[in-house]
Image 1 (cartoon, one colour):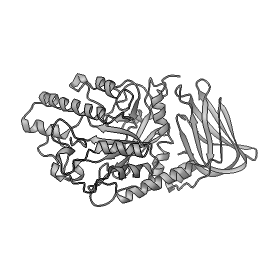
Image 2 (cartoon, helix red, strand yellow; image 1 turned 90 degrees about the vertical axis):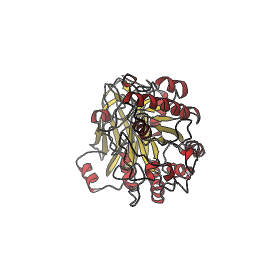
Image 3 (cartoon, helix red, strand yellow; image 1 turned 180 degrees about the vertical axis):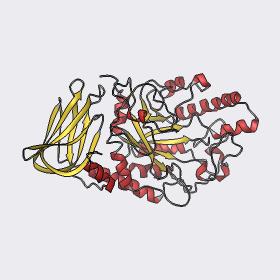
Image 4 (cartoon, one colour; image 1 turned 180 degrees about the horizontal axis):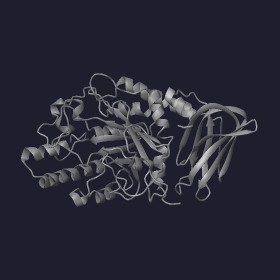
Length: 441
């Protein structure tokens, strides 16, 4: 059957929905642009989160139903949200020296959220600034940066417990090109962590980028890929997004998207760009519902809080997900190429959820769902991939029973969920048009 997931990857895929928090000095100096080499970086004196409340961040996100959260502990500016033994560009040298990483871990424990961490290994504006200021050549600058990098990831991976997921944004710089050999450090300190784009440092428990930051997951998205799953994240990658039926490696996709429009990962003064809960719910359907995990980007403002509007939207999103997936009108499971779902007489439905047992990898490669009503049959949905979870939104229709017909499979498919729902779906005109032309969402 090809590549198989580890137990850790199965756990991660079952979590389905996470969040990532961005908070950095450019929130306070918003005219700053990251360019290398740097002759100017955001000043520590600008860091004044006067109402800083990390617990509020986690409480707000927990209301959305997210099961894990990634904290960006050091983004491209080089500013660290934790006190470090190296350099002086971190929270301990500001007027507000709170160890945000420690507060984050504490709050995640309180709200039963799995904690992950992001540290940009390949981009550090502060070190670029030092290289510029000291006149270092490229080789010396990289050597000096690697010393800081090793110290800081050791601090992050040693001082805060076990991380659920470690995010390598843009992957890692190859050792052959002068990059730090991170693999033995990860193996020593965090051997069981899920790693996003960590293929060069960890041969197991990896996930991959979905290939864009628009919240779009391909209609059929395999958890398996052929070749390396690394990407610098600069250019959209369709083949990486879709995966491959015959992929050698189990690398499930993670769909990362900011909850603010215009690709805003960080808080921006002025207009609040937060998307509506209906828009985010649509993204949920098209990511989690297409066999991918959703990772929703959350901003923190210059006061040190998730904005009030965002808090409300997260709460609404959580309620809508709960409402739409809590009360199936009928559900079943089973093995084989044909599974029937009896609706116990004529029932109206507009949503179907499928799951297959992925313990041994992908089994289903082509299927259709047939409705039976008044003795007449009709194909109402079809696709290639089920994977961990597949969701179809449909026109509201009536049926006596539904049949899952698997036309292409390996071994005997084990379907762990086949459910029908009748829910309140708010669809845009274009979404309704897709349903008319059988583009099931």
